[in-house]
Length: 245
Image 1 (cartoon, rainbow, N blue to C red):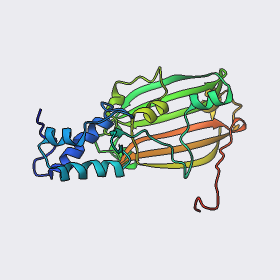
Image 2: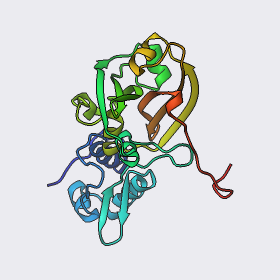
Image 3: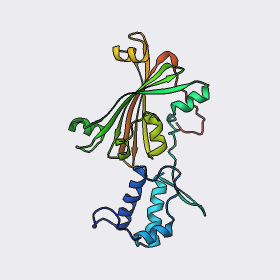
Image 4: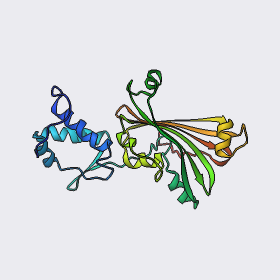
């Protein structure tokens, strides 16, 4: 079946095709590992030349959205941690590695519309909506981390319907949403009344805070603050002389 590529007709055809294909990935319609239609199938579907489609798929591969494999075809890429700075870890995977029992508890989950100043600070559209999720991560029933996360619905529309009760938000994003850039900030803080209550700490206890933002091709995907009890955690990085300064 022939398709009309989405977007204004005055935009180049290749750009419109890429927007539509990326939309299928970002929406979760094509999850990581999904085999996308072949180049010839896409050429027929969009009534375009091989050169146009090859440019589209090459650009998506360069952006890390898809992996092209000789003879096997093209597949939606699996998101990978930012190893050069700090690996994006999954709580459940870490618990299994340590032999602990993990669970999470969603404390807050709601849709918010940041005011214009907040939207601008986050790099969101002026009328952009976000999913606000706050949850507690527990190891062997001991509070291990408190997560406060915003997910851009402009970049991740599928998050509107996800409740995160079965899968914590960080794990869900790693499995379903591609990203091309990440930023990490680590700082120290002292537990206020809210943090001491949720993490079972004494008031003023030392905590480690990881602030992370991820983007997809310049558009914000998520911003999260994860607070860890300082006496239960350490961030460790491994470097070599050839890994760069």
